[in-house]
Figure 1 (cartoon, rainbow, N blue to C red):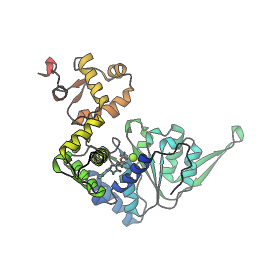
Figure 2: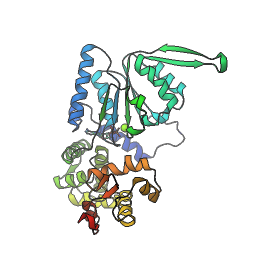
Figure 3: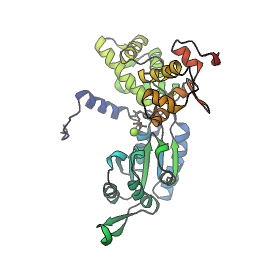
Figure 4: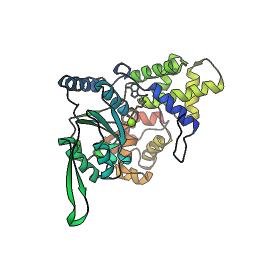
Length: 338
Ligand SMILES: Nc1ncnc2c1ncn2[C@@H]1O[C@H](COP(=O)(O)OP(=O)(O)O)[C@@H](O)[C@H]1O
Ligand SMILES: [Mg+2]
């Protein structure tokens, strides 16, 4: 067993979850369900680079959490037969940290920086020349005696991922050779993912249960897998051979997730607009103040799923809760929507 030297050792369930996570992660393009457009254009870029015997252009993946950005980065490395080094924005605190990572890269290595929106400006500035001309400039010493030395880097590919692309600076964004947006999955694709995962976990699930879980999965593979795992736990504890519609529904009940995957924060968000602002239109800044939440978080984290559901609309006058949301929440729609 691997010993962990960290102060807070992970709980047993977390370790098990991690292991399952590795099992469920797609190991090839065929197993990477959906996202057909992204897959197609990415594979052309990879194939062309391989034929030319060059490293791939720097790539940026963005989209909501759990849509498959990290998985995609791993597939890129796999397809290129290149080593992969994984780090993240918050892990790189100082310019020196990044310089250390970059100067230890192997030829053609893929450097994956997750949560790239959390790289600070000084670090971004180290990254620019590295991305453009495979150089880093390191300042040695302080004050008038300080001097800059330049180091040449091996050919490498930067793959960056972010859930909040608007927070990336324009100069950084413009240095990627290709940018891919991962969108929400179709419900059908989520069903395929659930069936595949059930298969890997060796658990039987009937079609009605698959569609209950798919509908509650927020069109997101990670959520789908999480719901499946919790449903499997429920079956384990309560006994039974097959995950049925009832097992699925009871599990959602325990998790306090409704049939469309709304959690309490989603309900509070919608109910606030409905009750305090008569369903809107109301400016996002006003909603943020009412919820005591960051405006950017509301835009990047709360709203996308609700918009995808057709529960929320952005208008020039502000946010409007749609009729479908009133109906789902069992409320009387506001006059202007009738
Ligand atoms: N296209 C896909 N097909 C099947 N499973 C997927 C797909 N994308 C993601 N997953 C599953 O969802 C999990 C979360 O994906 P991940 O790549 O970690 O998302 P992100 O990095 O965007 O937050 C993965 O471990 C994998 O099991
Ligand atoms: Mg990730």
